[in-house]
Length: 114
Length: 117
Image (cartoon, rainbow over all chains, first blue to last red; front, top):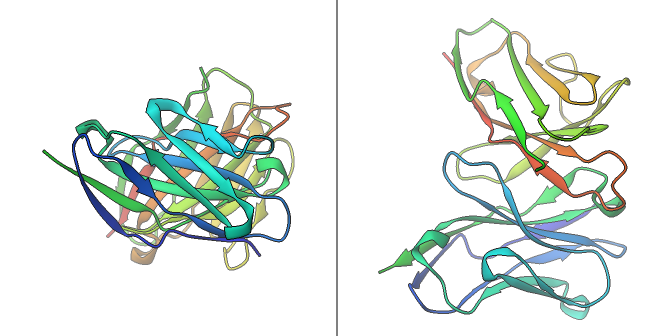
C-alpha cells in the first residue's frame, strides 16, 4: 500500500523568505504525485502535479516541486512567500493515474511571520 | 471551471438520526466521485469511491451500511450517515474526477462539518 510522509507538522517562515515543504512517499510503481493547499473554509486547491516527464514541475502561485525517485521525495518550494500563503499544505499520491482515490500526508501548517 | 459544491456546509444533528450530504460537480460531468473524512488537525482519509450508476467501493474499515453512498447522476453523489453517533463527527470532503480525463485530477468540494450531539 502507498503512504505519504510529511515530516514537518508546522513551519514558520518570514514573509519574503524562501520555502521548502518536504514530502516522502512509498509506492511500488511510478507514483502520481500532487500538492494541495487548504485554507480555512475553502476546498483543497491543486498547486501542482507530477505524472511523468520533467521532474521539476511548475504550479500555480509561484510554487514548484521536484520529483526525486532515488529519494522517494516530492518537495514543494517557493522562492519568496507571501502572507497569503499561510495555509495547510498536503502532499498526496494517487494510483492508476490519479483515477483512484488519493492517499494524503498529514499536512504541514505554514505560518508566515511579518 | 471545475467547481465542486457540497451541501450543507455544516450540520448539527442528534445522536441516532441520519444526515445526508450532497456533492455536486457544477460545470463538468463526473463519472467518479470520492468521499474523504478529515479529523481535526489530521489528514484526509479516503472512505469510498462512488461511480455513477453502480455501487460504491468502500475502503477497508469503513462501514458501508453506516455510510450510504448514492451516485445517481453524473453531477451528484450523496453520502448519508445513518444512525449518527458523536464519533461520526468530522469534516467530510468530496472530490470529483472529470469524466474521460486522461489523468485523474480530482477537484475538491469545500467540505461539510458534521457535529453529532
